[in-house]
Length: 255
Image 1 (tube, one colour):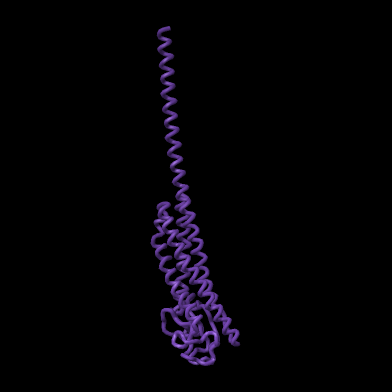
Image 2 (cartoon, helix red, strand yellow):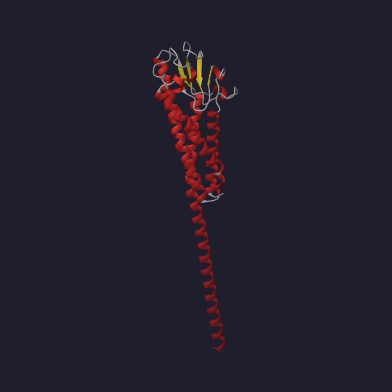
């Protein structure tokens, strides 16, 4: 199999893995089956906060209780402070503010809201790259197109994962500074960063596949050129030998 085609297939495999891990991240809190039951970005002790559960877990669409049970309604662009009531008491000072209906501070409102949107934009471009991935197997142009789309998807995914990490690491630190237990979700962070790593590898492989297709084309061209050159040389040698033999025969006849 040609190098360009093999690299394109390998890149598509990593792209598929990246999409799968991203879907695990986005669907956390939707069902209680594994691994979605264990997938969340942050778990924190919110006991004593007005309108909050004893333990809150932040997922992509919902805020849930322990093991992603007792979840609130799914909402797009969920405010970080949706875990408690408006103007709630005993919330870490850094987290509460006038945004999100009086539940979230300015900084955390925009950090997570932009992160939430960038996940969806990344998903769109990654899905487009996956649906058109067969083009990368056809030649240099197709591989270049998919590499470009993958690069855009990787860019948005990088921003989304970076904003998610900043949001929930800072939120955890705010809870700990307030004397509350809080920890990051191993599955939520693992799936997000795993998706980013697989997408990075896929994008690099698509770029290398484009060069591989170009090399395959040069190799075929050189092969055809060598074959035609050898054919012309062989024909010239055969014609020259025939003329030489005919000349000797005529000379012998008149000798």
